Length: 233
Image 1 (cartoon, helix red, strand yellow):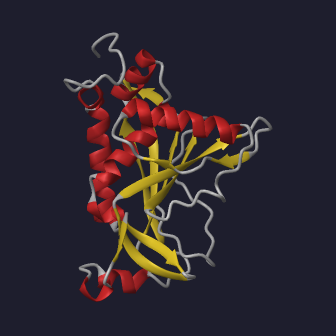
Image 2 (cartoon, one colour):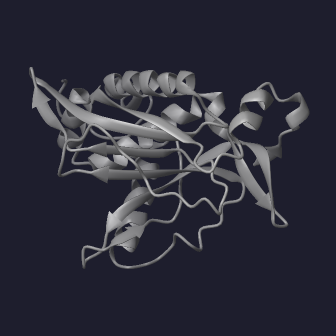
């Protein structure tokens, strides 16, 4: 569900009005995350690192109120809304090594349920099914997720369309590598400055890192049956 924001009463109205008409309102950073626990978990559980990182990114954004705000378009007019749900589209390569996008995948706290939908959407996109243009989740805020699993990097710039107002955060991470007995990745996030600032980026990075470090507790909380634990790590 979504609710239109009354800009006159919105606490962020000053920052929004400052940046909303910029040709390129996106700002962001690239940083390093410790994913040692995550690498161990996905290997033990035979799960997708791409899917599990997407799950954790969506989980972390859902914990931060600022990421629930974004544009919505009704009757050809853009307005600002606050959304209850966040969904992600992820990039994949088709069988011919061409870029494609999955349909939007809604966050679900149930890890196995989310992973099933992620894997199904990824499989369809890899086989050429184009859900990107027909996904129409008007009641959900949306983010874009991509991964460059072949390289390390220290900067990231995504394509943008200045003819279309977009508030979608854009997330990318690279190849994970080992340093001082830890697995690390370069992680980048771009946000529309009209909706989020460096403060909110910091909140997301810290929340995401904490969730990664606590992946064991998140997935093996008493009473949950997400994945079978093979060993403690």
